Image (spheres, rainbow, N blue to C red):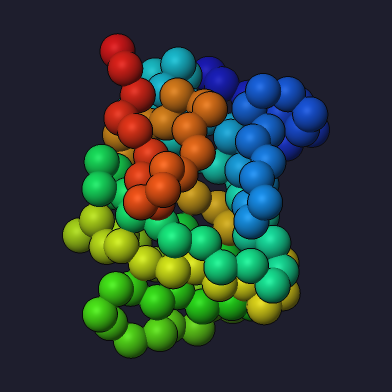
Length: 127
């Protein structure tokens, strides 16, 4: 059994902070669950280009407001209680008007230190 608290991750190498987001990585590839789970803050007033061409992701908003705009698609508002799933590896823009707190699940799982490259992509974790 794995039991962790957010406080156990804050300030460690699994607390990855960038200009537009802060991902507190709760479960990672090393935990052997077949997915990773993150408590992520999308910072107010930011826009992030994201394209998980190597992963699928489900995201559940528990705080804040913003929107997601898939490439070539409509803009979807995000508020607490919204879930979206990037099951087609959609390239998208994620915008926060108020800091959003998101619970994110990735498959394949992240190893922990990934950040988006210039295309918005995370690399696949090496075995």
